[in-house]
Image (cartoon, rainbow, N blue to C red; front, side, top):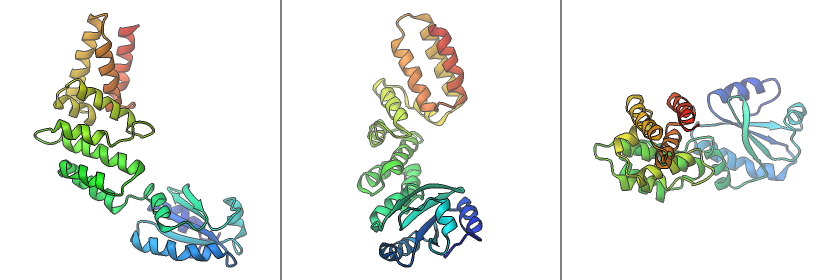
Length: 255
């Protein structure tokens, strides 16, 4: 759809509250723009409504081009929740654009992995390893497999280890939890405790943390318990009320 200054607020800003909007800044004289257009239109059809495609002619809409500091075209901006969250410049191939889109729009493969992880985590792991899900989505899917495995009646610890090692060791939103879970597996902590920490099950997690705290307070040689408690915070999450409470308690016990 062609968009101008008069309808940009409705068709882009407000629409992006519902789904991402790709805004293609182009011009009639721009050869690369004409190369890119069919690629974007094909991707719009492929994603079947998961994003909207808007086109802004920089020649007839100079105000918008200036507002978004468009210096070279084609320049594609991705809007989500009213803000620019990504984009690219130049006539990129479909595969490269698809990788950029998948950072903001869950692919069908990713959504299928999440569903499989919840119900059949043992099948989800090879699907992840053999599939095309990359980057942040791959780490999210691997963590979903961890959570799914912990919900099984018989927890397969080898599956847990294999799934969590699919997560990037550094730079992922799940990297700290990855290291923490591996530490717990190495320490042979029971699966009930693991599930309680990963899922934030308050009663079980509180009991476990209180037990660790008692051991720390009772012994000068408490490196193991201290390490396990810090790892527990990573599994619970930094903003979990239990993490905030027991961080304070740990600090008082140590100092």
